[in-house]
Length: 461
Ligand SMILES: *[C@@H]1O[C@H](CO)[C@@H](O)[C@H](O)[C@H]1NC(C)=O
Image (cartoon, rainbow, N blue to C red):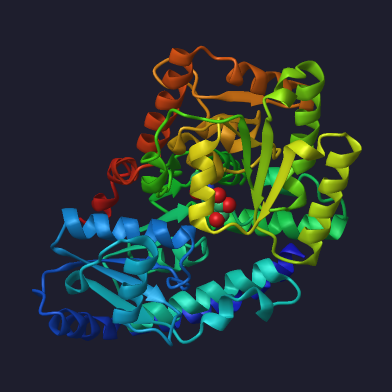
């Protein structure tokens, strides 16, 4: 199997030779691009490999925030984006970035290189051996990218690690921002079929070697860092020297609307914001409410409410909501539970303004943007003691707590009671502290500081 993998790498060498050949052409292309933007010939170029740059998701927010930052602090650098959005144009992409993320980019120092072979990295292209298929596809795609434009420095922002060795072969310094590892040792620890296991291990070795070609690696959370660290340490040879050390640079969250909500005047509302997916474990929230009312029947008179706001994408999700309704009625807490499906943003904000506490019950959530939103909105978070909510978000700030952790329904119930029983001054203090922390930690300024600390600009000398 491993031999097969190595053999399949042969065509890569051929592609690489072609790329090398193309390098000779690059000088004129470079000049033409700089000319078309009226930039001096000495302009340095920093390229981002982001074939789905027009998708409007979290990964794209990172890309545009980084580019806006470079444009602001290093106006003499030209940013280049390799994208497969051939039906878009520079101005339509910039307009979308503006409307979707409220990020204004300058067209003067931004250039797009449109790639026609994005199909090579689509998972639907490879019904079998998807990992290896997409990875080889990304090598071919970056070959197209480099044949169109050779930059002074390169960064993969979409997780195509196999592009890094190709870029390095041309002598271009490379970096990566990793949102999610393609595979990692903890991920495959559950694979039991022998053939599959060998495939994964062989793939992981190649993945690790590719990723090690990056001079700088940034990751989007502690969870991702843990996995990327494990990948980088995976090859049993080669020593530790020169292996890049991943740095956590959290993506910024847009908390502006939430941070404007008043902190006081909160009602007996327990809020949950999560799609109705099984891993979110909404049932635990209903059980926690049941425990709470059993231990402290006073809350019944106070008309306490558990408000569950969530996206419902399909019939499966709807069926799950029905099961949850049934659970609430079986436990006799139905009058205190309210489901709000697919709430528009202003409705969600209105609940964030009324709620006292917010729940997150998912085990090992990688991040948990809803928890950041609770905190920014002044809602005291009570979260599952695992994953991002435990490690990255609901952590002490200035030596004091910003929320609560729990695991079982009974623990959730007692934390809810604790939070609802805080003296008025302490109640206000924890809301204020949680807001200050969340807004600052996941702000654009913090992202930029992390980006700067990564020494990205050293790639350009
Ligand atoms: C990191 O990226 C992954 C994959 O897109 C995502 O699930 C996770 O929420 C991200 N983490 C942060 C902190 O944004």
